[in-house]
Length: 174
Image (tube, rainbow, N blue to C red; front, side):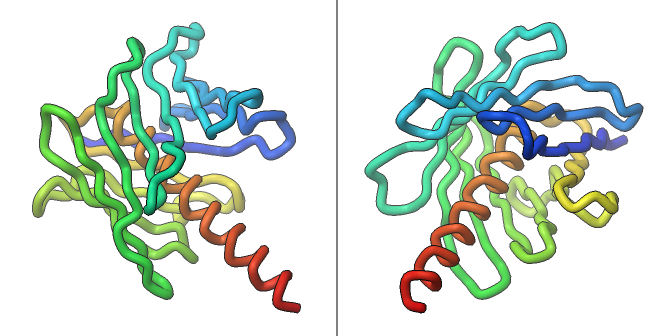
């Protein structure tokens, strides 16, 4: 049995706040983008506003790096961009006290697979939705849903940051 979530980013709101919905279209997690911070920070909350986890960009690293922290601020995973290829991207997720994850997929189509060793534990896909800024995350049973959702959001942010940087370089050349 898998659980499917829908992530629709609200492009109008300040600070990139958005909701993650379950298959029944119920808002189950809020992602609050903190505006007045030096580094990018997203806080995951339940529907009642209780902090569950936080994603924070690590500054001064050679590769793109984001850290997922639990509600108490303890690091639970580190996400690093591993490989740059024209259409396929890869991120390594070092999970503290658990098995590491690898996220690999097609950046243009926003199609990724999350693996733990050889086992697929989640899929991130836009193919389930017609809306352009909406994608789904399908998570296998007995996984840490918040961790997988945080990884999906971090990968999305890092993938778009790379595209934004490439666009800026192209504009400077022209």
